[in-house]
Image (tube, rainbow, N blue to C red; front, side, top):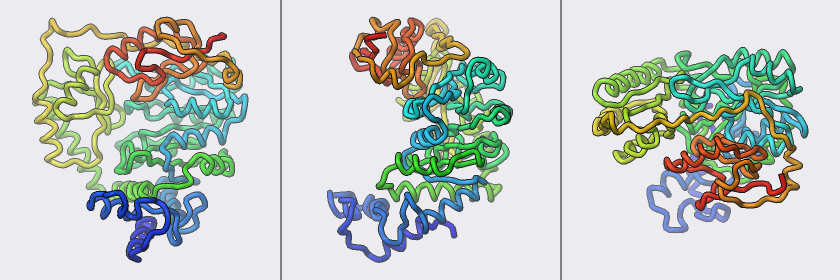
Amino acid sequence: MRYPISTSLQNHHHKNPISFHVPGHKYGLVGGVKTESRDTLLKYDVTELTGLDDFHSPTDAINESIKRLEKIYSSKGSYYLVNGSTVGNLAMILATCRAGDKIIVPRNAHKSVINAVELADAQPIFVQPERDIETGTYVGISVEMIKEVRRTFDVSACLLTYPSYYGQIFDIKAVIDYCHDHNMVVLVDEAHGAHLLLNELFPPSALALGADIVVQSAHKTLPSLTMTSWLHVGSSRVNIVELERYLSMLQSSSPSYLFLQSLENAMEFVYDYTEKKEYVEHFFNGRKIFLNNLQQTTQLTFVEMDDPLKIYVQLNGYSGYELQSILEQVGIFGELGDAKGVLWILPLQWSATYLEECIGRVKLLKPKNEENIMEERKNIIDFPSVSTIPYTYKDLKKLEIQISPIDKALGSVVAEPLIPYPPGIPLVQRGERLTEEIGEEIQSLIKSGVHVQGITSTKHVKVFSTI
């Protein structure tokens, strides 16, 4: 049956229930909630009542919905995540890494990956990914890089970010095969790839290429509420008992049925998209028209990424931060801006009005005169090809922490990672030294208006005082 969770919620609503249970809004009756919200959302915002199944031990509607997800994604096991891909990354690493285990982590890994490695008391072996020449952004790692790691370290797991935040891919199949040949578990943060199985015109999913665990953010590219994700198991190398234990431990004991319903709707959207050829044709035709109009009638230039859902837009004379600002002034909000351009994530379904409105607003933007073109920042930090933190996380917990102005903290070991957000990729990790080069880059980011997590409003950072 399609939509079992939605059906169970509708059946419950048709009972015209009187609430003497949580949540406190009582189907929207308490708190002066607007009628439209009460009628469309809050009537389905319930707790785990009779007939609605148990999220942490599903046997009915939720279980049926998850089994359908497994079939659609061809996984050996799938799980709904109501705490975002963050909880998926935490669970898959905690379930596969023990204290002291070494895990390969690319420098473009999300902060949740690093947090998971610390919680597992494992040792991250950082690898500097290859960069895209045109945009200067990280792409991925190669088999040769993993071979370089193995010359020094005995690693048991490899974490991969695929596709990159910007939508670039690499030969992940070769990496997966090599890792498996050398007894490494492959964990993939595929947060930006929940849509990849829609059609062969998109890059292949890591799940289809043999990864052991894949975490996907349904909300990033599919029509699902923010914080909704899912996790897929791809092989028998995964300890399912441990994985489920950590998922139960880390996820909320009060799951939102709005999230579960949204995940189910996104899953059915995927099913319809894969079954109906016209959906794919509509997307690619709309994309072609949009990019042609962008190229022919506006001053913007753009780079098409490996993932057709993403483009990187630029405007002569402007940094990406400046371009992001002026786009927002005409009501166009991109995913993020960086030194060179702005990343856009396109919709999987177009409308003529959407296209016309966007192009009309972009036409208002004009390039700067050549004499006003700002000097481009380097925007690239030269990290070692392979590196690790020279301390265990357990040792770091014993050290005293002090707060220092960032210019006085150069050369110190940071006690909290410094993370430009978005995209949430640390520039310097907890336990690493704040070099002069990284310090200059952070100061430049702040000057450009980028929010950097780990730095206070007075430009202070936390450092260890005794090392």
